[in-house]
Length: 279
Image 1 (cartoon, one colour):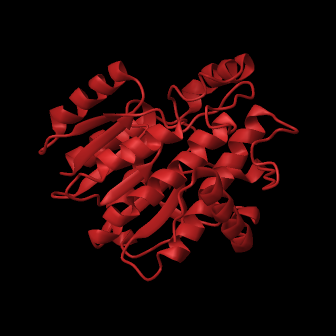
Image 2 (cartoon, helix red, strand yellow; image 1 turned 45 degrees about the vertical axis):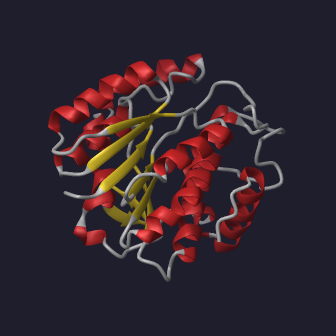
Protein backbone atom coordinates (compact mmCIF):
# COMPACT_ATOMS: atom_id res chain seq x y z
CA UNK A 1 0.00 0.00 0.00
CA UNK A 2 3.03 2.28 -0.17
CA UNK A 3 2.17 5.47 -2.01
CA UNK A 4 -1.58 4.91 -1.66
CA UNK A 5 -3.90 7.15 0.34
CA UNK A 6 -6.74 5.64 2.38
CA UNK A 7 -9.58 7.67 3.89
CA UNK A 8 -11.26 5.85 6.78
CA UNK A 9 -14.44 7.15 8.43
CA UNK A 10 -15.21 6.15 11.98
CA UNK A 11 -11.45 5.81 12.40
CA UNK A 12 -11.10 6.96 16.00
CA UNK A 13 -12.28 3.76 17.71
CA UNK A 14 -13.11 0.11 17.14
CA UNK A 15 -12.85 -1.44 13.70
CA UNK A 16 -11.99 1.83 12.01
CA UNK A 17 -9.09 2.50 14.33
CA UNK A 18 -7.76 -1.05 14.00
CA UNK A 19 -8.06 -0.86 10.21
CA UNK A 20 -6.27 2.48 10.12
CA UNK A 21 -3.35 1.04 12.07
CA UNK A 22 -3.22 -2.04 9.83
CA UNK A 23 -3.31 0.00 6.62
CA UNK A 24 -0.56 2.28 7.94
CA UNK A 25 1.57 -0.77 8.71
CA UNK A 26 1.11 -1.82 5.08
CA UNK A 27 2.58 1.51 4.02
CA UNK A 28 -0.56 3.50 3.23
CA UNK A 29 -1.01 7.17 4.02
CA UNK A 30 -4.10 7.14 6.22
CA UNK A 31 -6.56 10.00 6.65
CA UNK A 32 -8.64 9.32 9.75
CA UNK A 33 -12.15 10.77 9.94
CA UNK A 34 -13.87 11.05 13.30
CA UNK A 35 -16.13 13.25 15.37
CA UNK A 36 -14.43 13.43 18.76
CA UNK A 37 -11.21 15.51 18.96
CA UNK A 38 -9.82 13.62 21.95
CA UNK A 39 -10.33 10.14 20.50
CA UNK A 40 -9.14 11.49 17.16
CA UNK A 41 -5.85 12.71 18.60
CA UNK A 42 -5.26 9.39 20.37
CA UNK A 43 -6.02 7.37 17.23
CA UNK A 44 -3.82 9.62 15.12
CA UNK A 45 -0.90 9.10 17.51
CA UNK A 46 -1.37 5.32 17.41
CA UNK A 47 -1.40 5.30 13.60
CA UNK A 48 1.58 7.67 13.41
CA UNK A 49 3.60 5.32 15.62
CA UNK A 50 3.53 2.58 12.95
CA UNK A 51 3.23 4.68 9.78
CA UNK A 52 5.91 5.22 7.16
CA UNK A 53 4.13 8.37 5.92
CA UNK A 54 2.42 11.04 7.98
CA UNK A 55 -1.27 10.36 8.71
CA UNK A 56 -3.89 13.08 9.04
CA UNK A 57 -7.06 13.63 11.05
CA UNK A 58 -10.28 15.20 9.78
CA UNK A 59 -13.11 16.00 12.19
CA UNK A 60 -16.72 15.86 11.04
CA UNK A 61 -20.14 14.92 12.38
CA UNK A 62 -21.45 12.71 9.59
CA UNK A 63 -25.05 13.10 10.75
CA UNK A 64 -24.97 16.66 9.38
CA UNK A 65 -24.91 16.95 5.59
CA UNK A 66 -23.20 20.35 5.63
CA UNK A 67 -20.33 18.77 7.57
CA UNK A 68 -20.19 15.88 5.09
CA UNK A 69 -19.92 18.40 2.26
CA UNK A 70 -17.24 20.39 4.09
CA UNK A 71 -15.31 17.19 4.78
CA UNK A 72 -15.50 16.22 1.12
CA UNK A 73 -14.21 19.61 0.02
CA UNK A 74 -11.17 19.21 2.28
CA UNK A 75 -10.53 15.65 1.11
CA UNK A 76 -10.75 16.72 -2.53
CA UNK A 77 -7.63 18.81 -1.88
CA UNK A 78 -5.61 15.61 -1.33
CA UNK A 79 -3.27 14.65 -4.17
CA UNK A 80 -5.18 11.37 -4.54
CA UNK A 81 -7.65 9.08 -2.81
CA UNK A 82 -6.99 5.42 -3.59
CA UNK A 83 -9.27 3.84 -0.99
CA UNK A 84 -12.40 5.22 0.68
CA UNK A 85 -13.56 3.18 3.67
CA UNK A 86 -17.13 3.95 4.74
CA UNK A 87 -16.94 2.52 8.25
CA UNK A 88 -18.64 5.05 10.54
CA UNK A 89 -21.90 3.73 11.94
CA UNK A 90 -24.16 3.58 14.94
CA UNK A 91 -27.21 1.96 16.44
CA UNK A 92 -29.51 4.16 18.49
CA UNK A 93 -31.86 3.64 21.38
CA UNK A 94 -34.80 5.88 20.58
CA UNK A 95 -35.85 7.50 17.33
CA UNK A 96 -33.95 10.74 16.73
CA UNK A 97 -34.08 13.13 13.81
CA UNK A 98 -31.00 14.93 12.50
CA UNK A 99 -30.72 18.63 11.74
CA UNK A 100 -31.47 17.74 8.10
CA UNK A 101 -34.69 15.95 9.08
CA UNK A 102 -33.50 12.35 8.65
CA UNK A 103 -33.78 9.41 11.02
CA UNK A 104 -30.41 9.39 12.77
CA UNK A 105 -29.32 5.80 12.09
CA UNK A 106 -30.11 5.97 8.37
CA UNK A 107 -28.47 9.39 8.15
CA UNK A 108 -25.12 8.25 9.57
CA UNK A 109 -25.03 4.66 8.29
CA UNK A 110 -26.27 5.19 4.73
CA UNK A 111 -26.95 8.77 3.64
CA UNK A 112 -23.57 10.06 4.85
CA UNK A 113 -21.50 7.43 3.00
CA UNK A 114 -23.72 7.82 -0.06
CA UNK A 115 -23.11 11.58 -0.11
CA UNK A 116 -19.41 11.40 0.79
CA UNK A 117 -18.71 8.78 -1.87
CA UNK A 118 -20.57 10.76 -4.49
CA UNK A 119 -18.74 13.95 -3.66
CA UNK A 120 -15.37 12.19 -3.77
CA UNK A 121 -15.97 10.26 -6.99
CA UNK A 122 -14.09 12.77 -9.17
CA UNK A 123 -10.98 12.20 -7.08
CA UNK A 124 -11.47 8.42 -6.91
CA UNK A 125 -11.96 8.02 -10.66
CA UNK A 126 -9.10 10.39 -11.51
CA UNK A 127 -6.56 8.19 -9.81
CA UNK A 128 -7.13 5.00 -11.77
CA UNK A 129 -7.57 1.87 -9.68
CA UNK A 130 -9.40 3.01 -6.56
CA UNK A 131 -11.59 1.11 -4.10
CA UNK A 132 -14.69 1.96 -2.08
CA UNK A 133 -15.20 -0.34 0.91
CA UNK A 134 -18.38 -0.06 2.97
CA UNK A 135 -19.01 -1.78 6.30
CA UNK A 136 -22.41 -3.48 6.34
CA UNK A 137 -23.61 -6.25 8.66
CA UNK A 138 -25.31 -9.63 8.72
CA UNK A 139 -28.06 -7.70 10.52
CA UNK A 140 -29.25 -6.67 7.05
CA UNK A 141 -31.07 -10.01 6.91
CA UNK A 142 -33.56 -8.67 9.47
CA UNK A 143 -34.36 -5.52 7.52
CA UNK A 144 -37.86 -4.39 6.63
CA UNK A 145 -36.97 -1.43 4.45
CA UNK A 146 -39.76 0.61 2.91
CA UNK A 147 -38.56 3.30 0.54
CA UNK A 148 -41.83 5.10 1.21
CA UNK A 149 -40.84 5.42 4.89
CA UNK A 150 -37.05 5.43 4.89
CA UNK A 151 -37.07 7.67 7.99
CA UNK A 152 -39.17 5.13 9.92
CA UNK A 153 -41.88 7.55 10.97
CA UNK A 154 -44.02 4.43 11.43
CA UNK A 155 -43.02 1.19 13.11
CA UNK A 156 -39.70 2.39 14.50
CA UNK A 157 -37.43 0.11 16.49
CA UNK A 158 -33.71 0.56 17.03
CA UNK A 159 -32.83 -2.79 15.48
CA UNK A 160 -35.13 -2.27 12.49
CA UNK A 161 -33.48 1.10 11.86
CA UNK A 162 -30.03 -0.49 12.07
CA UNK A 163 -30.93 -3.48 9.89
CA UNK A 164 -32.52 -1.21 7.29
CA UNK A 165 -29.38 0.94 7.13
CA UNK A 166 -27.16 -2.11 6.71
CA UNK A 167 -29.35 -3.40 3.89
CA UNK A 168 -29.04 0.06 2.34
CA UNK A 169 -25.23 -0.29 2.51
CA UNK A 170 -25.34 -3.43 0.36
CA UNK A 171 -27.86 -2.03 -2.12
CA UNK A 172 -25.70 1.11 -2.40
CA UNK A 173 -22.61 -1.00 -3.05
CA UNK A 174 -24.34 -3.01 -5.79
CA UNK A 175 -25.64 0.07 -7.57
CA UNK A 176 -22.33 1.92 -7.19
CA UNK A 177 -20.52 -1.06 -8.69
CA UNK A 178 -22.95 -1.10 -11.62
CA UNK A 179 -22.50 2.61 -12.25
CA UNK A 180 -18.71 2.32 -12.07
CA UNK A 181 -18.47 -0.80 -14.22
CA UNK A 182 -16.73 1.09 -17.03
CA UNK A 183 -14.14 2.59 -14.66
CA UNK A 184 -11.22 1.22 -12.66
CA UNK A 185 -12.98 1.98 -9.36
CA UNK A 186 -14.44 -0.98 -7.46
CA UNK A 187 -17.04 -1.08 -4.68
CA UNK A 188 -17.42 -3.87 -2.15
CA UNK A 189 -18.97 -4.28 1.30
CA UNK A 190 -18.55 -6.60 4.25
CA UNK A 191 -19.85 -8.01 7.49
CA UNK A 192 -17.08 -7.63 10.10
CA UNK A 193 -18.57 -10.03 12.64
CA UNK A 194 -19.67 -9.16 16.16
CA UNK A 195 -16.82 -7.12 17.58
CA UNK A 196 -15.88 -5.81 21.03
CA UNK A 197 -16.04 -2.06 20.41
CA UNK A 198 -17.83 1.04 21.69
CA UNK A 199 -20.53 0.28 19.13
CA UNK A 200 -23.99 0.09 20.67
CA UNK A 201 -23.16 2.29 23.65
CA UNK A 202 -25.71 4.82 22.42
CA UNK A 203 -28.34 2.10 22.24
CA UNK A 204 -30.94 1.02 24.75
CA UNK A 205 -30.09 -0.31 28.21
CA UNK A 206 -30.94 -3.89 27.21
CA UNK A 207 -28.66 -3.61 24.19
CA UNK A 208 -25.76 -2.32 26.29
CA UNK A 209 -26.31 -5.11 28.82
CA UNK A 210 -26.39 -7.73 26.08
CA UNK A 211 -23.16 -6.43 24.58
CA UNK A 212 -21.45 -6.55 27.97
CA UNK A 213 -22.59 -10.13 28.58
CA UNK A 214 -21.55 -11.25 25.10
CA UNK A 215 -18.19 -9.47 25.08
CA UNK A 216 -16.11 -12.58 25.90
CA UNK A 217 -17.48 -14.28 22.77
CA UNK A 218 -16.93 -11.35 20.43
CA UNK A 219 -14.09 -10.71 18.03
CA UNK A 220 -11.36 -8.21 18.72
CA UNK A 221 -11.38 -4.97 16.70
CA UNK A 222 -8.28 -6.20 14.88
CA UNK A 223 -10.03 -9.43 13.90
CA UNK A 224 -13.15 -7.53 12.89
CA UNK A 225 -11.08 -5.20 10.71
CA UNK A 226 -9.37 -8.02 8.83
CA UNK A 227 -11.91 -8.30 6.00
CA UNK A 228 -12.03 -4.53 5.68
CA UNK A 229 -8.23 -4.38 5.31
CA UNK A 230 -8.35 -7.29 2.84
CA UNK A 231 -10.86 -5.49 0.61
CA UNK A 232 -8.88 -2.26 0.84
CA UNK A 233 -5.50 -3.75 0.00
CA UNK A 234 -5.43 -7.31 -1.32
CA UNK A 235 -4.37 -7.88 -4.94
CA UNK A 236 -6.76 -10.86 -5.00
CA UNK A 237 -9.80 -8.56 -5.12
CA UNK A 238 -8.38 -6.12 -7.66
CA UNK A 239 -11.04 -5.57 -10.30
CA UNK A 240 -13.75 -7.38 -8.33
CA UNK A 241 -16.77 -5.24 -7.57
CA UNK A 242 -20.26 -5.38 -6.10
CA UNK A 243 -19.52 -8.14 -3.61
CA UNK A 244 -20.52 -8.81 -0.01
CA UNK A 245 -17.72 -10.41 2.02
CA UNK A 246 -17.64 -12.28 5.33
CA UNK A 247 -14.36 -13.44 6.91
CA UNK A 248 -12.50 -12.58 3.74
CA UNK A 249 -14.80 -14.69 1.53
CA UNK A 250 -17.41 -13.64 -1.03
CA UNK A 251 -20.85 -14.51 0.31
CA UNK A 252 -24.42 -14.16 -0.93
CA UNK A 253 -26.45 -11.57 1.02
CA UNK A 254 -30.19 -11.75 1.57
CA UNK A 255 -32.66 -11.80 -1.32
CA UNK A 256 -33.65 -8.22 -0.52
CA UNK A 257 -29.99 -7.21 -0.80
CA UNK A 258 -29.82 -8.70 -4.32
CA UNK A 259 -32.79 -6.69 -5.63
CA UNK A 260 -31.23 -4.49 -8.30
CA UNK A 261 -34.46 -2.58 -8.93
CA UNK A 262 -34.60 -1.67 -5.22
CA UNK A 263 -30.94 -0.65 -5.40
CA UNK A 264 -31.70 1.79 -8.22
CA UNK A 265 -34.74 3.18 -6.42
CA UNK A 266 -32.76 3.65 -3.19
CA UNK A 267 -30.01 5.41 -5.16
CA UNK A 268 -32.48 7.83 -6.72
CA UNK A 269 -34.12 8.50 -3.35
CA UNK A 270 -30.77 9.03 -1.64
CA UNK A 271 -29.70 11.45 -4.35
CA UNK A 272 -32.88 13.49 -3.82
CA UNK A 273 -32.52 13.48 -0.04
CA UNK A 274 -28.85 14.46 0.02
CA UNK A 275 -28.73 16.67 -3.04
CA UNK A 276 -25.77 14.67 -4.30
CA UNK A 277 -26.56 13.59 -7.85
CA UNK A 278 -24.11 10.84 -8.64
CA UNK A 279 -24.27 9.64 -12.25
